[in-house]
Length: 345
Ligand code: OGA
Ligand code: NI
Image (tube, rainbow, N blue to C red):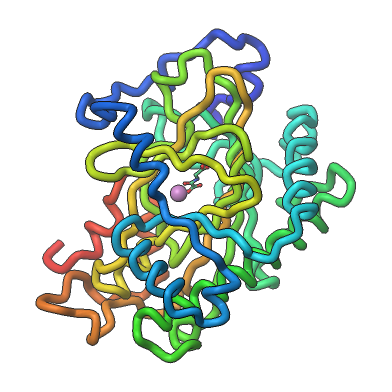
């Protein structure tokens, strides 16, 4: 969008300048009453072992059930992705963003959702997020639109492909585990997706001289089944809303952060929570984060499972494509999407 400034260039030309369009009036109730509390909660975010989950370990599956119910967020270790591949993805991405703007603009977003640019820049006058993004569709493989794929640095395309294929494997393993804890056949939930769609969103968040006055990513929940996020090992930026506080998700080196998305919340009739989250910039350090979104196919029907409806059915059954179409029309806006799917809305 023409009116949306490129954040990286803006910071390069003047690191101290924070244009008004980025300033957020953060409501007091949005802010943690006590940072100590939030940090305390932060250390309780569940950590799950993927290899145990995938081998059907009962106790670990119980932990997954608890994590989805109480947190909607957890970190995954023992996921089997080579540390070298994670590092390669980070190195190549950093090199891509260091390219001159003209080079990156060869794959800039043009009306659609893919490419390099400023996502969620929808209307002039809205508050802008302090980040630039690169968005690519990965799976099914025929959904890839190579005109949006970076051609530099050398080997970046192959690295994106290798990383994303590992994320796909992890996603499918997780969805099988979710199927089990939802008391379905192991492959039933995957089957209901018809075909899992996967997209990558890289968020590039330059340092900000007024980190408390802007947001790198506005509060939102993800429209996915699950989202799998790789973050920087040593810069905290992601925060989740828990007990009225914004709780930071502190990076564990080489772990991946997973969150429950709206589709899973709806299938589970609200038992599992698609939690609101946001990202904040750091005052002195660049942060790059890599969100992989796993969605049901647009033709898939998503509605609460009968056996998970305890007293009342909270959500309508809908075609996932219709849900997405409505959800992506607006700017990131808290839990507006799932509200819209609720019965009576
Ligand atoms: C997202 C997201 C978190 C982060 O892209 O949907 O929530 O830390 N990202 O970048
Ligand atoms: Ni998100």
